Image (cartoon, rainbow, N blue to C red; front, side, top):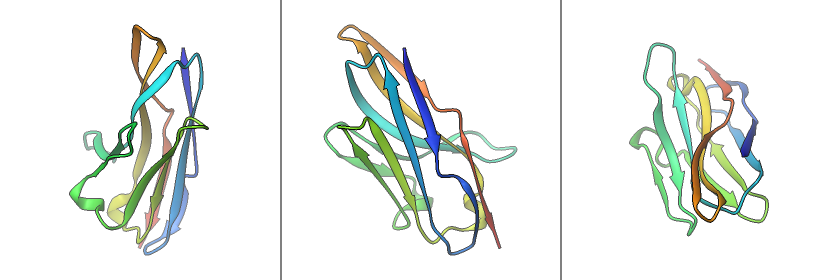
Length: 120
């Protein structure tokens, strides 16, 4: 089993910055894609940013140029640096990891979620 622990959410004023972290632990053979999703009240969960094992990144149009996703493979950790935050970025942010606990056992794992609130 793979466990994800998120940290770094909080309350920030518009224009400010936050850095989210998500560390994977447990029975890990390898990790493929890692990503961040968010869900605002009354809305569907949406992809914010993703990063492959080779470091290729993709972003939602709404965060391009403001957010940066990165990963530390030695620490099994993915980060989301969020700059120039806007009130519409307010949501619960979830990390997602596609990992193998065995060479044949691929799973899709989610963090517990961390609240990000941006005040105007």
